[in-house]
Image 1 (tube, rainbow, N blue to C red):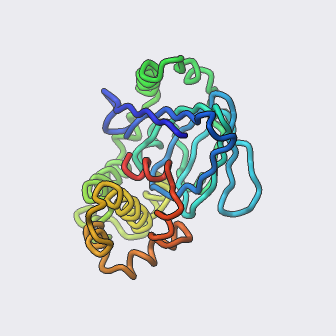
Image 2 (cartoon, rainbow, N blue to C red):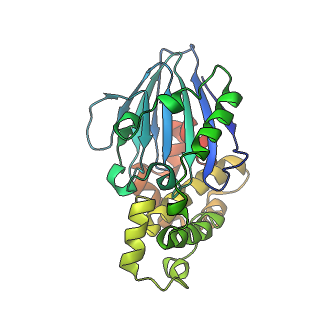
Image 3 (cartoon, helix red, strand yellow):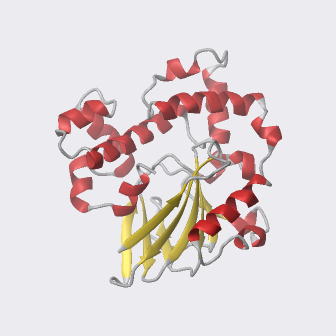
Length: 270
């Protein structure tokens, strides 16, 4: 059994989507799930290192660091958590991790980066208490001191921020030409900015967000038909949905829901 608590920041709502706390119950020795791409970057802290991770690139299980940055993924990956595992997460918007950590996001696509590789993590670890809500508040105060206002005020970041606001408001539905309008930037430069601040191209991000919107709609509106959900989520038809879904998950929408994806289902709407 997986339990998750979430917290919406009080001050950093424009930069941090949510904080979360997850705990694995003792009813099963091992909890294993395939996690699909969701378009967001996260910083994750394991309190007892009870987890392993398998990338889409190989079949080797890797013990996850106690604190790490999880970059964008373009394919599903697997996690394995053992009974009693406890972890905290900071969920950034697709483009807002860079102002805190100044890492070109394309450099950590489909991988996990130990936090100790880029900073002394002792300060942020000191934010963690036995109470999730107090921990969330402590983390928000700590992150306030980390923000690079030089990055936030830069022309490149402000452009990406405007484009991202358009993408997020429509859950990835605006056309690529539409979201470039008014920026006066070439397609190549736009792509370079997204690689730096998001990790992937606008088109790729939009496709991932639409898949997650479909999953969220299916869960929240079970009375709707498959066809209705397809159009509601921004797809031309079912073949368009199935092709896009398979590209990122290696399965069909129907099989995805048959197999059960508790964590991915929660985070698709988080």
